[in-house]
Length: 328
Image 1 (cartoon, rainbow, N blue to C red):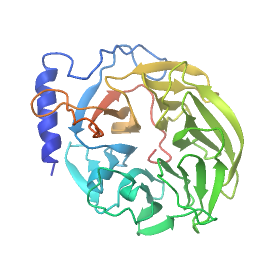
Image 2 (spheres, rainbow, N blue to C red):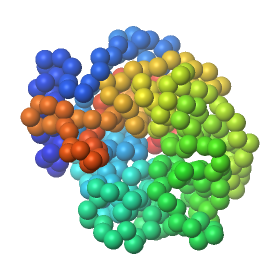
Image 3 (cartoon, one colour):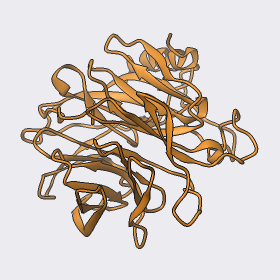
């Protein structure tokens, strides 16, 4: 059943949309990027809420799934638009990843999310957890006993392990061993793997860095892969069937070639955070973006000092096709 707050926000947004730009939106015109997106493609608003929709992934049926840490849930929007909870009691999961075998992983942020009132005391460690096909903790500390801090993004490696960011970049093996990929001179956020799984990409504010993945899951040979063409705030990433990278930044979605060349920018109505291909034949790009319209038709605002976690999900028809070898 669709979240009542999300429904009210969405209905208000749709009503205002009929009159032009929504409060908080910026005017954008999508220009063609050959093989990627057509000239004049238009963003469509499909969901809005006062809580997050982060770490989005596509699902095999053409829907999308995302983490909402403030409600301790992993939620799904089905192809018919229905929204429902897939995993409850996630202990503040803030990002998710699914591999080709259907294993679902999450970065559990527990009480490091200040708005998560269901978890009190801050005595529960953050962790990287597998939810499906069975629930188990992969890791909740580094080899030296230090906690993971606030894990940000997670990416399944397809072999039972996962990469995650938490100030640096780390790998947790299927057995739970944590190794460091890089933790110096880097401002990490989102991460993804190349279609063949041999290259790990990680955002580093204004650039994307790349690493070679070894057979045991560890990674080395750090190098700058591509830039955001003067933009900053590199965050989530997705990849298409041709190996092109899609990277969210302050201005929109940047598209990089498999060689790291900046192919163009897809401007977004709001600041984008995360993204994934899904829909029929994986030719729709879903992009959760910061901000939302409240039930009163105005931009949703919070009292001074209270973090505004409102988000809106938009989708865009694409020429490019998402990589079909895994959900994201």
